Image (cartoon, rainbow, N blue to C red; front, side, top):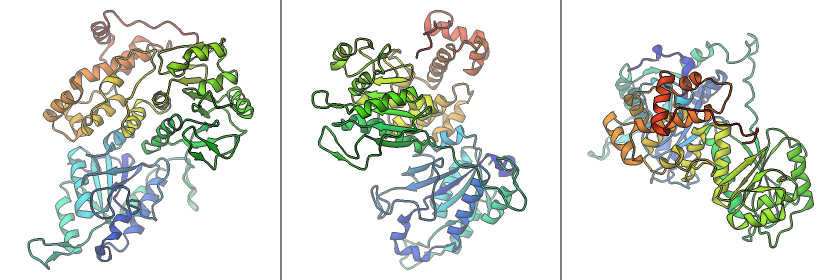
Length: 528
């Protein structure tokens, strides 16, 4: 067991497990333990936030009343209000690791110590503690921030184990074996003693924690007859990113407060076209039927102004025609639905229309092919904003294929090996995508997958068709290919960033894969 005193409290995260209304459905709620449970959990959430440390929430779902997917009771209790940077993960197992992306999230945030709180004490809280200890985390089990209920003896009707006995037994079983047993007041005091995350606080009146970073805006600009799939797919991708610590402020805007879609759905309550669009904003124009839709001049003028002000302007499918009418395709490479590429070129001869592409970016303007390619475009933009781990996590949540620009090779490590449904292998892949330079051993990767080394080796090959080592080498080569485009990086720096021992190893692996030594690609005139 890794003891909490061996890991600094500054590397800790708070787990709030299954503190959900589902438990209130059962009559046993009236016989719950820990009268100060809500106050103790809330004090720990405040303390972790004040210390600038992560807080993660979990909801449990199964077939029991109140826990079923879609139940109105399947939500956090009212005294909890997660911030946008605090993930809420849904699990189907008695521990928080096996059925969620918790391991890669903790690895990405440098967390090596966990504080466990929630419901039930001897079930999901204890099981999570045992698994966490086996995975190498130090654990603080906050006894008075967990809750339980009497357990009936199924073999002897009328007999039960009371909450006091359960509490005593849980603390006895975990203490010094899997966790440090502590209490909310003690842990809050230890957190308060940490150096403040920001400027020093005045002794008389502690400064409030810094406000969260404003979420980047994504503005979906809707023309009459907007295609539902062109809107819903990319919008869902940006929405799901919040669950992985990268929230966006997603808004639908239009010159009119209502828009009827091509499928007859009336969209109401649309925001007006904002006047303060500028750098950092992203505008997305979904497609619409060309035969029946005339894009309002006000929308075209607004698109031109947004692009001139520095916003990134994107289009899905026939939305590219709106960009063309706004003059934003002149001199730029672009694409659209394969049936419309010739028409797009004919109507806007100054554009450079490319066929057989999923999406194309040129000087701040991004265009995609039809329908599902809008999701591909959104995932690529998420990867640029938050890295490949964010993009692959969102793709997995949406159960879609993670693809790259059609201009790149379709034999992509991100394309060919993410289509299986093994959650443990997915967690290992997500960790390796986020840390291709890491020299994690097979045993360490096994802890990420909650598997033994032998099981991981077999499961990984069965799910992907290649070994863990071969997958890691492909990731490193993929990263090296991208880093070699940076003229400020030496080949030695690229080798180190990709986890190679030295340049000779990079050259040897690269030559075996590509038939020659690594070379820098030619410049592309500043356009990507």
